[in-house]
Image (cartoon, rainbow, N blue to C red; front, side, top):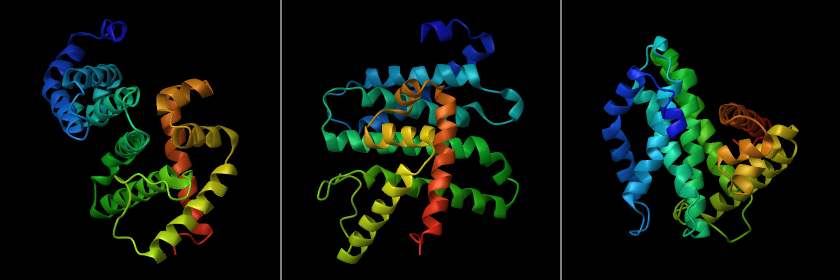
Length: 236
């Protein structure tokens, strides 16, 4: 973190100072869903890493607010940090992993489409629909590799009927087939993150690509999977 911070100019440092309350707020929110023994200062430290990276990458010419730009990066850095803690149960780790991948999906959706979406009601509806569809794929992919009967209670719909549960299993089975048929880089990314439990940063390192490229590939792969599910009738 210090090597990155040393490359920041005075204006970047000012952005970091202004966003300090948001780092603490996000860390506090996430900590509420973690065991009591988790140190808030550790979460804040993880958030600071995301904040510094956001300040380094922020493009002022795009016209967006820095706090909006930094929000998902701070959350993502905190979730990345939490995922490395050794105390977590399998179920809790899956929940953290789900939130982490959903956060990346929301971040990419905001970065790519939010400015255009603000121009009209139709644009907002299209942006919302695209992001919602991707989040649905994140949810389904998070469950697609589970053994029968093994569910994360934090993600499970307890009110689901037997018919709905069976439909969900069928969709997950189709999704596993679609993942296995993906081009190699996309398939490895999905398998490494969702099936093996690696963070997006770790998956990028294993694949020999940058974190930003992995994030773009993740977003595109979600779109491809959603399109393929529609074609096979899973969304009907």
